[in-house]
Image (cartoon, rainbow, N blue to C red; front, side, top):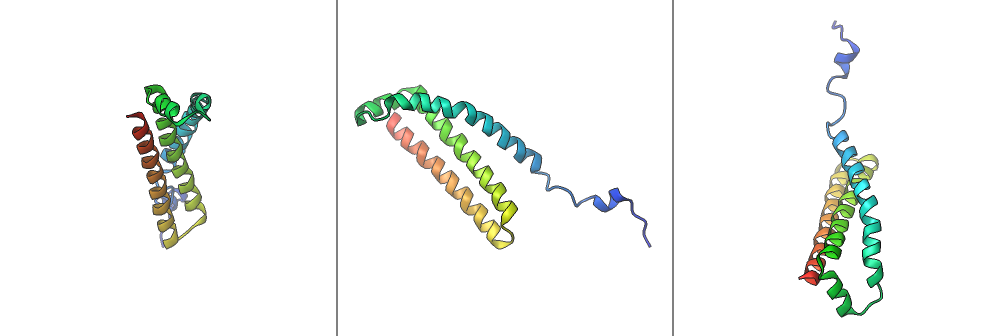
Length: 123
């Protein structure tokens, strides 16, 4: 017969050691998006509805291209973290792993596509 304290019974049953990191990553990306989204709107808004050559010339400048690139990167990373939380909470077993891999591939593919488009316009 073993006498175990409450602490001894709880050791090893706690978090997976990644919750705090995930929480802070979501908070930091939220604050970054709080700055980037209005900045993107104010840099992209004046050129909206212009001719193709004018848009290409506008995004050939470094500041609008950098703002658009950062918004894409941070936005889709935030999307990936949020979808990961959603999948971990509501999907279990084998489909959870497939959904996590699919969501991660989708977000990184969207980042790569967006950055490629901006690089093609800017260069």
